[in-house]
Length: 338
Ligand code: GFB
Image: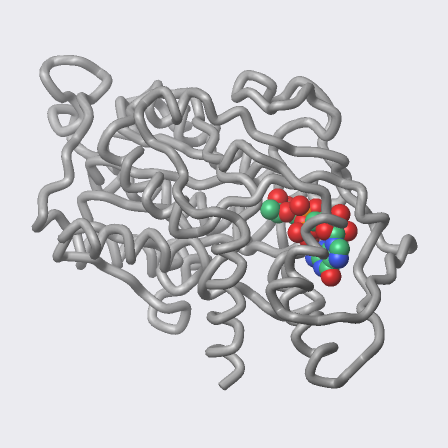
């Protein structure tokens, strides 16, 4: 039987868990030479965190590609922590996808996300990591929760069915951070970003989110002199978009300024309908044809605007305007096509 004492044999020594004589550590400040691991450093979110850390002068950044480290393999993750000894960890590695991928591959989304986050979080605790930031998603909130979404609405109602598998895994991740904080005094925090876009996005039409999908669709339609582009659903759902570089900056800010059990929302504060978004992307790309709405495709949740007032009150604010951000994302897409 596993007792609380038996955990001590595999986790860090008790003295290492206590800072200033309390079970809960004080905010740990990253130094310029701190060893910082960004899990998922090549993806949309991880690459943005990496850029934000580099811009702030942090010198010992650690990243591993999927072929170098399989985050699904517990022993490999354990060995990585033992060899590299990271002091700070950003958990930006996850299996992610748009509405269709989430809906079509529920088993992959729940299993892979649980496995990856269990390994990164538990092994971080075993390796006495000073601080860890886990990233979730706005889809963890109930489908019909009041708007804007406050952190305390978590687990107050049923989830959006198209992404409940991913959401359940992400809820487990944030609960795991809370549990390790409560039981072991680990300084593990979690943040919930809204819908994201930016450099290094996934532009595959079957698995991508709406914004990169629209960039590809309008770009290809323009190149082919097509007369129309087909978008999914009714176009009536609202979504809030945040540029990945804003999220990267917010993650570094939270690592340095936030140490509470409650998760914290990271959004831009403004929302737009999918129909308006399609018009904006069409304008940026310069496509002049018609937009057709395929109502056989799911709309997903009608609205998910985050209430990010707790983060804004701490002194952080987003900087990248949506239209300017889409212009940058379109440049990134064209580079990825070269
Ligand atoms: O970005 P998206 O796939 O994800 O879709 P969610 C947002 C909205 O855009 C939906 C519509 O109403 C889609 O029907 N849409 C229109 C399109 N045209 C397209 C298109 O060509 N491709 C795509 N993908 N959508 C995901 C969740 O939800 O968002 C995840 O499934 C995660 O769990 C992620 O939370 C951030 O915002 O609906």
